[in-house]
Length: 103
Image 1: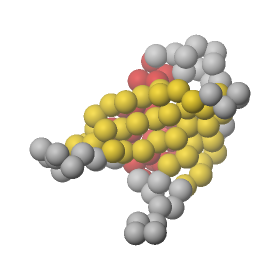
Image 2: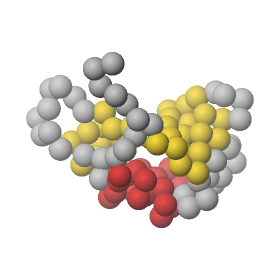
Image 3: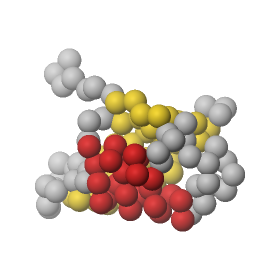
Image 4: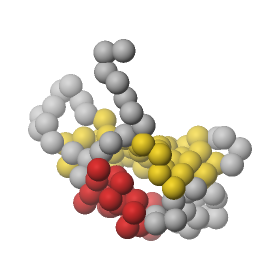
């Protein structure tokens, strides 16, 4: 990661239909650099999409060398991600995505 700049990051929680525990999910963060190239930045298990789980993922990204904070974070209405972004990436703008099911 180093000095690479990810302009956008997308975050989501993926739940399996083979749930052994309906509270566990896969936390995913994908980054896009200034050229539009996308990379998988984080893939981790978490407790739902809680603030604590999302905080662990953001801290892990920083420990692995993410120095330049993204310009924009994109995600759904999962509040845990937004609370973690405000604390650890305060300069990053936020864009929430609304997903309508059954459309």
